[in-house]
Image 1 (cartoon, rainbow over the protein chains, first blue to last red):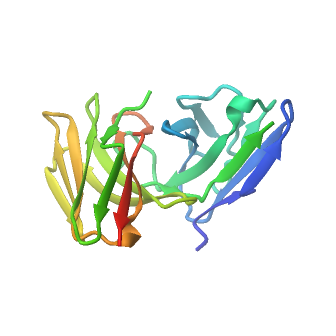
Image 2: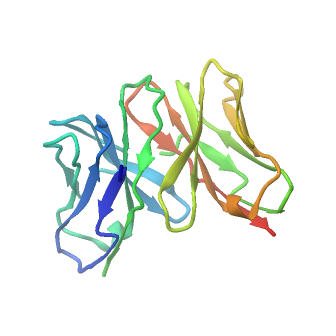
Length: 116
Length: 110
């Protein structure tokens, strides 16, 4: 199994451009989420999904859109890139996402995004 | 805002020594998880402790949880250079969200 696969690994954008970060998992996990990691800030939740067709906002959703049309894929879209969105983005999945879930999350290796 | 806060922010020890990292959180939880992140990689799950558990072991890892103090500790015994990484605690309350702390950067010198 590949686990959680993120593409691309690196990307440089200009301010105002849009792009989609791809995330795919092959573990048939219901729960998927996107985090951004900035120096000294740890991981902050952007958006998450508890199953196909269901998404919700996390801590820092502004400037990002998500959709979940299949169980496997959870793309993150930057609508109009800003320098403040320069970060490392991680996608994660777990077997279930109910509030009392004791399932660990499986992470991809991240997308390093720079916005000039 | 972050739920968990790790302490210390950075820790440097010699190979063979024990490493202890602490995590404090603010609200009631269902479970607390510890993750490791090697440089340039994603996070890897290490251990999960439920709110009704006080201690858990996994190989050289020992995690304790004190819900009355809203704190947890991660002990790595007989550390190795390969343990050099950042370590994060993450808490899950009654919502769908897993909230991460800012991490402790551990350096194990050979």
